[in-house]
Amino acid sequence: MRLFAIGDTHLPSTRGKTMDRFGWIGHPGPLAEAWDRTVSPDDAVIVAGDISWATKPAEVTGDLAWLDARPGKKVLLRGNHDYWWGDSATKLRKLLEPYRSIVGFLQNASVTIGPYVIAGSRLWTTPEAPSMPGGEMGDEHADAGYVEREARRLALSIDNARKVLQHQPGLVPVVAVHFPPLYANEKPTAFSALIQGEHGGVRYVLASCDAAGFRPVLLLDDSRSGASLDAVADRSSSPLG
Image (cartoon, rainbow, N blue to C red):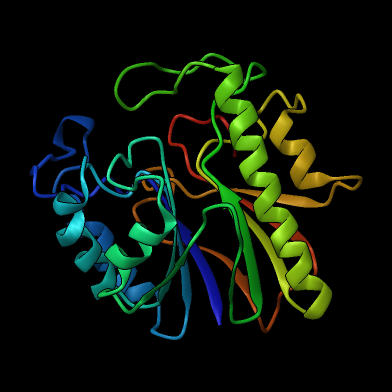
C-alpha cells in the first residue's frame, strides 16, 4: 500500500464557490484527473484539511461523494475553512458513513491503515511563524489559546498512535497537520516539539494542492518505507518546503 497526501482541495460545496480568482481554473477537474491516474484503489490518501467550502453538513455531501469517487482509502483532517466539520466525532462519523472509501478522520486519536499509523490535528499559526500573505487564503493570526488547544489535541492523537505502536511496532508513524508545525526559519514551536520529541529525523512534506501541482503527493511506499516519521503539512501560504 502506498500512502499519498493532498490538502487545500477547497471543493465548491453546494455553495458553488470556485477557485477561479486564485488562478485554479477548472478546479477540481485537473485534480480529479491526476488523482485517478496516480492513485490505485489499494492505496491510502490523507486529505489534509480545507477540504470543502461548505459551512454546514448539508452543503458538503456532494464534495464527500467527489472524494469517495476517487481511488484509494481516505483519512480526513480538518482545516481552518472546514466549518462543516463540527466538534462532535459521533455526528461526523455518521455524516461520513455513506462514503465507504473514507475510512477514518483525525480528531484526538489516530487512524491505522495498512502499514501506517497516522496521528494529527489541525494546528494553528504560532508566534514563531514568519509573516505570510493575508486575505481569505492567507494565514490566521497567532492565538495563544488556539495554539494551546491544538497542542493538546495533537498530543492526544500522538499518544494514541504510540499505544498502537506498542502492540504493532512494525507500523510506520505519520503525523498529518493543516498548519505547519515548523517554518522555514526553523524556530521550534509548541507543535514541532510534540512531533519530534527527543529526537529529530522527521521528514516534513508540503502537500497543499497548488504547491503539489494539483496531484496527490506520494509519501511512502510500504515496500520501501523505513521507520522514519513523516509530518505532512497542508498550507499553500506556508514557507515549509
